[in-house]
Image 1 (cartoon, rainbow, N blue to C red):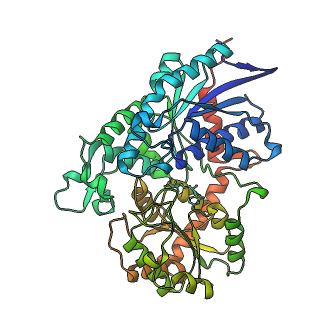
Image 2 (image 1 turned 90 degrees about the horizontal axis):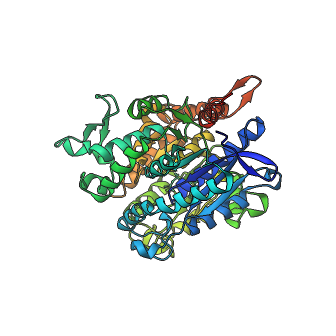
Image 3 (image 1 turned 30 degrees about the vertical axis):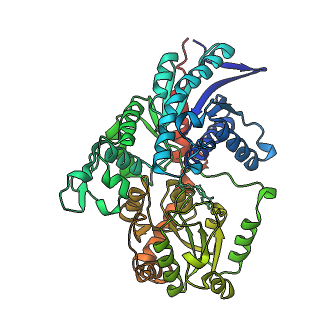
Length: 503
Ligand code: UDP
């Protein structure tokens, strides 16, 4: 059976992608699409048309992002976007509640993730339409880890389904296993517990888990959603992971044993650089400020696209920074309990005169709301990253050779932070969760260790981060006949999804 679609005089194989509606999922899916296109075009093997399907607001967001990041000479890209009809109000969500960025509570996040089940019919219609137009269903569907239901659609049309987990292998496994088994609820009064899928003697800490996860059990609605969707995702034909084989040896080994499916490590999928004219004022200000600083002397601080710390923690962090006299760039938003996109009330949330003092001494730059993270991390003045350990931030930091001070808050961030500290030796956990009571002295001690120590753990973290930067770069490079692991994995993935030739 021929599976190629036809577009003008050009033959291609069609892939349909369905990402979860959060920045940290949408962008890696777009990067995955771009990477599939780039590698298959440059190796002049088969060519692919890729359609990314999501709700109207997310599609608008993706198109804008795509155009801002693509140079004109990239016009060989055959990436398309399809809208899946979605009415947020029908699911009890606010009018713009199509993306986690616009949600205000755990309850709304739960509603959005449950509402994704309603995409099954629109996705089926999209696949039908493609089948009608091209004579065949798409070669495969690549669906988010949370969208196990996509397997039902794929089966109906006799096509493959591939699950894409936008997290690392270690974090994905720990997240899946914890939400399926709740091991932290059976460890009596000890803080330590083991997780199915990890060696028995390998211990996780309950105190590093955020309160919601610590308090719920298997009867919780999110737990029930995750258990059903994750087990459906385990029926996929294979998984793609945004990681690098050599960086996540343990995590990949354990995840493969847990899901019994092929896993292709195609990372690091990093944000494409912005086109010159799209750079913002904030971006120029940050770079000019960093240009005046010594090499490897500045700490970068950010808690990702949707998290913030408590008002109490914000005060401790500011005081600790001032005590340690470290230079820093801090992407700052209102603390927990306030509108994260609202006005910043410095008088209330920061030490008196903090922002002015940091400005006049040129010790610190506060960037409100959103910073150009990749530009900052790749600047030679950056020495370390104080991060919530969202997986994209982790990959971006390591691919720039920057060690990480972990302050995990939600999702699988605590497992990422643990992996960075214990497996890779490129991280140290300062504190965990938004509920923790951290003192300015604790902040100062950890920052001093990483920023100012000439020997010991802080120094080793920096060296290891540099080594990982090289490993990551080589994974995506081709030197003569030697291909990096992520390139090989892509070749292998493409061979896997292509129909076997019949004579
Ligand atoms: N990001 C950014 N500027 C900011 C905050 C975040 O560019 O001020 C980007 C960051 O580079 C990363 C993504 O947003 O690519 C955040 O993803 P991550 O997985 O680290 O965390 P999440 O936001 O999903 O919690």
